[in-house]
Image (cartoon, rainbow, N blue to C red; front, side, top):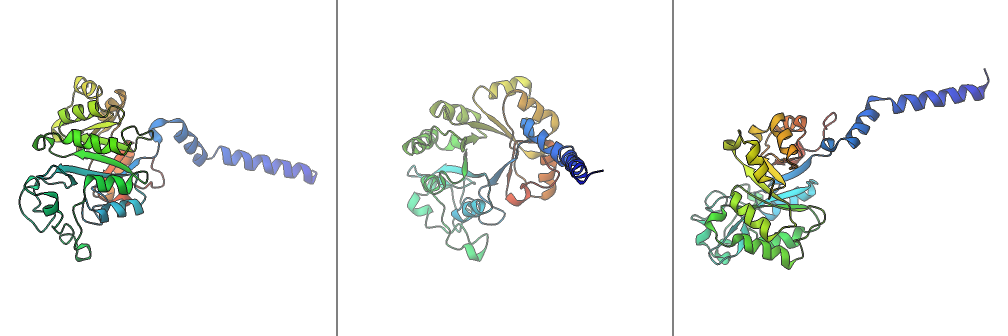
Amino acid sequence: MSSKLIFTLLVALIFLSVFTSPAFASNAETKGNPHHKKVVNVAHRGASGHAPENTIAAFDKAFQMKSDFIEIDVQMTADGKLIAIHDTTVNRTTDGTGSVSDYTLEEIQQLDAGSWFGEEFAGEQIPTFEEILDKYRGKIGILIELKSPELYPGMEQKVAEALKERNMDKPRNGKIIVQSFNHESVQLSKELLPRIPHGVLAGMSWADVTGEELEEFATYADYFNPNMNIANEDLIDRVHGKDMKMWPYTVRTQEQADRLLDLKVDGIITDFPEYVHRHPGKN
């Protein structure tokens, strides 16, 4: 047998082994199946497992960890300013006490929002909504949760105005999303910001959500984002069947992340972005 023929046979064998390997087949399947796309990594209140939640430190950490989105909680001060804080009181995450709505912006930004998490974060302030938009626009996606909007009449309009002032109300890449547990607030926000994707948040009470309810959500929402404990294959299939996506919350362990990755959710909202970064064998 000539050396030229042997060389040709070897090349053919290498070609066959590469393009029929499981790795190649899995790669091809991933490209052809829309539900095998990369899972969106959403840093809950920033990378809040590593830095004090809803602070610039936590948002910067999420960016450094290459999260796709930061999730922020928006509320309003006594003088009508939009700020990022989760609880309706300042007790848990600052050195102050009382309701968020009792503080002016100047007063609330004098509070220490970092020391409770660690001494190295002493002096962290509660950031404004506008500050977050200006700092992270174009760098990382922003998932905006309207927090307890029933306490803050007009909050939806103020959020919409802040986005419109920055020409962020017509995103081409889906990097701005608005969501809330208050579904009436989501509907109002969608009317004000028709080109921005919206999501409905769903707690444990929505474990038995009906097809009719999902169909109603789909008239104004692009996402059905449930408590991770009610996420299962049937619910994911039904949500996808209504052309919505699912980003469950809130992952705090590797095991929780792995379960959701196995279910092939569209995104995961987590305090620890490193748990969602893809692992070998996860699709």
